Length: 294
Ligand SMILES: [Fe+2]
Image (cartoon, rainbow, N blue to C red):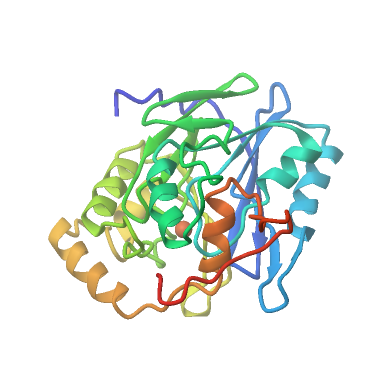
């Protein structure tokens, strides 16, 4: 991992916020020295049946940042989520900070721009975001130097973010008993996902890993923190020396049985716009359903 500026001596404060509606964990990551922070993978609440959007989850994050007197430097999306809507613009409006995502968002915007038959007003150049990260790019949270790793497979634009001794895996990995995320969305690739996971597992053994999702398999309580050593030894999909071919065979068979996430239709339309809800020709917030398009 010599090309990545890993520094295990940097120990950020990590505060986890679990969203029970989507099994997503959002994080506030704080530099203890400067009280600057980042929010990773925020959630906007939606009652899709009613077409109603609310902000309870985001308001809790905002309240904590304010109560603790933190300065928000970054609002990070580990990828374009298919199972929840991002609250990035709402948080930015209240607290400032720059919205960052992987540079391969352009691939996502091209793919889903077509599927949702977006017009020319939908820019496919990532300009909805303030920063587009490429592999190894660094950025600052206060005095902490952070970096992003390209980890395609679940989606083409997935990135894992490393902040001192804390790594935010997005959907690249789940807890050891949860395994890995599906790789069958447009642009997904099980072999790429295996390779990406191996690069995460090449980080130091003591690296803290923070998951974006947990579903409490086999009835256990929700958890979100593990370590590289633990994943290497125990991950049910990639741990204990499972080979790339074994993983691809397993992942492909499993994915063929999965149904689409409940919120994939609204999530993609909003998240490929950095969390902005699209509007119709009169400027009203409006979502589409492409029939037999996914
Ligand atoms: Fe995801």
